[in-house]
Structures are given as C-alpha cells and as structure tokens.
Image 1 (tube, chains in turn red, cyan):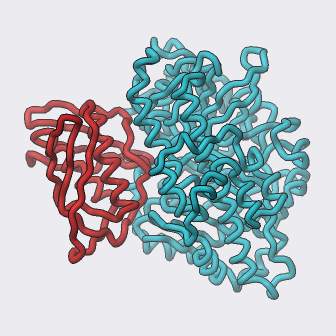
Image 2 (cartoon, rainbow over the protein chains, first blue to last red; image 1 turned 120 degrees about the vertical axis):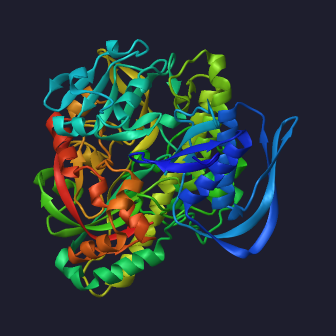
Image 3 (spheres, chains in turn blue, green; image 1 turned 90 degrees about the horizontal axis):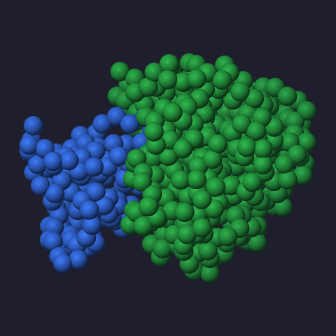
Length: 135
Length: 485
C-alpha cells in the first residue's frame, strides 16, 4: 500500500472515503484530493492564482472537518481548486496556502463534511480515517 | 454479515417492530420501526437501525425513536428517523434535521388530461429546464439584498407572495403556511447569508427534481376529489430544499455545538448527534437559525412553482383549455418543529425532529388547511426516478403511534458508487425514454446514481405505512417528464 492515499468506500445514501497518510498534514492533503475526486472537478489549467486560509486549533477530527469544509466551500462558491497545499502550524491553528486553478464545473453536489463516527486512528504506517460526506 | 438480526426485534404487528430499551444500556427509550418484514430485512445490512439506537440515547427523548420503512443509513440520525424531545429536559440536534433544512415536496394539480400534452411533453421538459435553474452549485439570476434575505428568513413563502410569486391558495396549502415563527437572521452566519442570496429559486443537484406526472390511479375518490386529483390528469412535483443556505447553517451549528456539548454534560455515541438543551442559548440560537433555513426553503419551492407555471403557460397556452397549476400541498421532510402530541396519556408540546420523514397529521388537526380538516393532511411520497409516486393522508393512528409522521420516499438500497458500477447512465436514459419518460439531467453519471434499481420499491414502502395505519392511500402518480439537477 502507498504511504498515503484515499479510496471511496460504499455508503448506502451518502459518500464515504477511507484516507491515510504518513502524518496529519499528509492525511489532510489526501482527504482534500479525495474530496475533489468525489466532486468531479474540471479545471481551467491556464487560470492560476494563489490563495490562503486559516483553521483554528482543535482536535485532529475537528481540524479535518474544518479544513475540508473550507476546501468544499472554496470549490463550490469561489470555484477554487488547490493544486497543492502548504500547511504551516501557527500559535492559533494552521495557515494553509497554495497554488489554485479555477474550477470550470463540478459533477456532483456535496452538502457537507460530517463528524459521523469520525476518528483519526494511528496505524503502523501513520494515520488513517473514514470520512462521511452528505450528498 | 448483517449488523442486526431479526431475532433482536419484537414484532408488534405485521408492519410494526420494536427494539426494546434493554437492547443497549445507554438507550433512554425503545426504537419503533414501521416496515414489512421484507423491508426490515433489507435494512439489516446497513447502519440505519443502529443509528436509531444511537438516537435513542439523546437526553429528553420521549416515548420511542420512530423509523419509517424507507429508512437507510445516514450520518448520526438514520434517514427515515423521527425523534421527539422534551422542551424542558430535552435537546435539539442539528444532525437530526440535516444539512438540507426543510428539504421537502410540493404537489400541484391541473385539469389537463395526459393525452392533451402527449405531443408537448418534450417541449414541457425543455421549458421547465429553461425556467428552473438546476445543477450543481447553480445560481439564480437574482441576487438578494440584505433586507430581502432578512425578509425571506422571517416571512418564508409570504415573501414570495409579497413579490407576486404566489397565490393565496399556495400559502394556505403549505405546511405552516410556508413560514415558521421564531426565525432570526442574526443567528445565521454571514457566509450562510451570502451563499443563500444567489440561490433562491434554484433546484440544485443530487436527488432533487421536478416531475410532470400522470395521476394513474385513485384509491380513495372522496379525499382525492377534495384535493383536486382526478385519474388521467396531470400533476407536478417539486423536490428541493434550502440549498447552500441550509447546508451552511447546519455546518456552522454542528461545528459550534462540538465545542459546547461537553459543558452540558452530554455524552454521545456519535459526534454527528451533537446537540444542545432546547432551553440553552446554543439550542435557542440554532432553532432561530434553522427556522431561517426552513423559511428560505418554503420560499425556494414557491419561486420554483411560479417558474413551472410560467413554463406551462409558455408551452400550453392556446393548446389546452386550462393550463393552470393549483397547489395541492407542500410538506417538509427534514425539519424540527414544536408540536403538541400525546405523551403517556397527556397532551404536551414537544420538539419533533424529522430526518427524512414527513409530517402526517390526521383529520381534525388545527394545523392543516380548513378544506382538508375532514380528510387529514396530504403526505407526498415521491418514488425513485421512473417509478410511481404516492399521495397519502395522515391518520389518527399516525397521531397516536408516530408523532404524526410518515415515510418520505423510496429509500436507497444501493450506494452511489455501486449504482454507477452496475448501471450505465446513457442506457438508463434510453430505457426511460422508451417507457415514455422525457428526462433532462445534469449528467449521465448523476442519472445512474439515481436509477430506480438503487432504491427500494416505493409501492412496498407505501404498503408498509398503509398496513401500519399511519397513512392512507389516495392516489398513485407516474412520471412523464423528469428534470434532474
């Protein structure tokens, strides 16, 4: 198995992702990649810019939901797709920045990132979690 | 391996089952399931029943957590779940209402016979698709000002009436006349307001739809006549909710309550069940914000109804004698309401959470339109795409057994990824077309996700609620035109 990645797992009505990474930052990045995959983004590769946002400090599960909720909002409302994420820990939380491209279309609506049965677990290879999205 | 087995349930009647409070030590009340044995067995493989058991641990939960036959696993609460909580000792849970606050269904009837539109159904599909913005993240041409957003939050469908988008009959035939009291837009975040101001009057994506239906069969002519439903005529259903406005309100409060739930000493088996005491500042703030979302959704369906009427006029004026659409009813299936119910022999005001469940008040209720007082409240149960939908009525049994609640649809049995693996969207589109159904869909993949095979048989769902006595059959509808987001 790759040290980091994600895979969609079956959920009767909504969508769920299994995500893993060597550390928490890798987990966040993979979760965002998985979310973009579920959304079915198509991007304009020639329309590139920079964007940054902050996430308040909290438990890992809360940080994960806050981070993904912001990524989801930026994709749906601001049409921003992060090509990469630079994550810097700050005294109050995290500063996330990266190169962005403009989203031309989304194939699917995702209403929210949920806390349902959410738990970031330690594994031999790092961290792993299962995320449920409301669609 | 099923997550539950049938021997863990006590059978009360052919269509009613119970998981006793002794099933798990943290349960405060039993779980009551309305379903045939076949539908119950279909639900044992997913987490819906265990999610209902988790819901039964909420502080102040009363009598039983109810589960409808269209149940399927959700996040926190099961879809098809109903829970009533005590106003003094109980909690309000945003996840028990859901992200799509006041997702619901509107039914409008016409005096158009199906054969009159046979040559125009494709044109109707194009016109409705043109007038009603649909699809992922779609925005309205209107951008509401702060004052208009405030008015929508407080007045709901009444705002649409003041702008000329509604008739008096639309308002009187909407649950709570399309407006919940106690909405306060100051309790809604600026992000939610901004997301909402460009989305009023839009259908959205997912399982939201507009359908032109044939009234295929009348089961109870008296009430059908009262509702203006006649065999062989055309009706329209609109299924949508509060769009990103509601999603953001729920996201904000689920997040806020994660921080405060511990201070109230509440222990939960699932963080998505997060809640606050109803009489706390957190609980009151959520209620005020949720009511804004509910009122936005009532206004949203009203604007879409106006657009569908314009589409009908543009296609059918001069071609049929009477192309007008008259509102039968509009009802929510994701909502939290203060209602009076009989709790252990005493009438009490309680907070009813309905997550994928429809209000189903019986005859004589003061909360239904005067012209429906003798027949009961219409319950609108859309089927999966290409299959039947149903018009039912609430009963005295629903008042006594299910907090005046009933099912809300067919209920999924197949995951979206499984549906896409086994169903080819283009093939489904052709199949529906051969069956005489005009479909307009955002994408073929999205169409495959919503294929009829991914859902339970809605007729069996309706048999269960009718068999349990919590609803009465009135009419069955068959789709002729489907607009999917």
